[in-house]
Image (tube, rainbow, N blue to C red):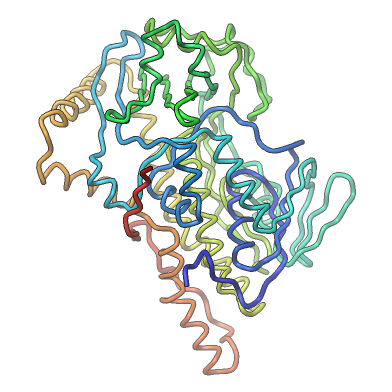
Amino acid sequence: MSPSKRRAPLGIDFIIVGAGVAGLASAFRLCQAGHRVRVLDKASGPNRRAGGTHLPPNATKVLVDWGFKDELLKHALSTRASTFISIDTGDVIGCLEWKEDVLQETGADYMVIRYRDLYDMLYRAAVNAGARITYGATVTKVHANPPRAELQDGTVLEADMVIGADGPRSIVREAVVGWPCEEVPEGHSAYVAIIPRDVLQNDPELSDLTRFHENRPDYPIWTGDSRHVIAFTVAGGTEFAVHAFLPDSEVDGIGDHDGWDVIVPRERLPFHFEPKLQRLLDIPATYQRVRLFQRECAEEWTDESGRLLLMGEAAHPLYPCVLQSCSMQIEDAEVLGTLFSRLRAWDQLPHLAEAFQELREPRTRAIYAKETKAFDTVWVGPGPQREARDQALHGMMVEGHKGWDETKMRWQWDEICEVFGYNARDAAEDWWVMWGMLRERSITREGHCPSNYTVPFCMGATVTHYAEPVVLRN
């Protein structure tokens, strides 16, 4: 039986704090696994964040397994290359291309999608699976004994387990570790907008730039000194998602308020770039802004009782609008759902909660390091380092035009297998076969679980789980 269709022998009640991608995806998978789920979110309604998001193969394969193939074909677009452009001159620097044969070995396509489409997809799935989602419900405190959430209006809701999917400033994280997540401003903010392509009809250059080219499925990255812009076509080819990263020191009136509800007028943003990009960024009247913060991964993701659990950015914060920002939350949900589809006794709760951290922490730490390093690559200033980067990107573009030999494709596979080839479902299933069943056999043989039993730390960051290729084609 597929893990996504397996129902736990023991169904329990979950409260999930936070109705973002992590919260909705987890609600969907836990309901699929036979549990009862209520999601609480302080926002007044469903998330209406602008912009788009990447769905690399490690995320796409999970969504296809969940039954979202048709919706991905409708809303998302496949891509396999990024073209680097000088933010100052508009000259093409080079191209980073992932060969289709290599990508297919990872198990699925690399896709991009409008954030709202991904959110709505997960929201509908969670509701249809039986989750109850309540907006306007601000959680002020959570407790483990018994598991419950206190709301701002005085309401107290009880459950068997409380999951914190409420972002880096998590109320649940504070209850688990004893203090709020420490954060230091990184010094940049992301400014995000959606541009309808029909407004570009009178500008042939921009119309061509923003069009999805099936024979050339790439997206542009304008790179400069401590700034960059990344953009891609979404909504089935009808819109263009723009994400501009700028130094906070160059934007007046940053203020202390932060979050996706911050709206910044275009005229306040110092866009002084190459002419084509300048015309593109001048189109939106406003941008949504979110600041970048340096935040540490939580040391503990669950409390001693195993009744409070952190996931998503509450456990492992990642910069917004990066390649793996939504993918890590989707992977979390799949691992969580697969583990808790094995629940058959109450004393399993703390062990499954510990297993979740043991499976996910090495993976998310490795991804955080890679995403942080990527900023250093696109923000490098003038000098020898930039020249070396540009030479490497130009060389990859030239070699791509000449054709690829087996040596070059082997290098690509070695580079991406650990990241794109990871299979969240298989990671959780392998843990169960290696360690979960060991504990079950111990209980069956001895009539109880030994008091000194601990779940072994078995999954290091270098372990990769692969899937059969999933090809999304109409």
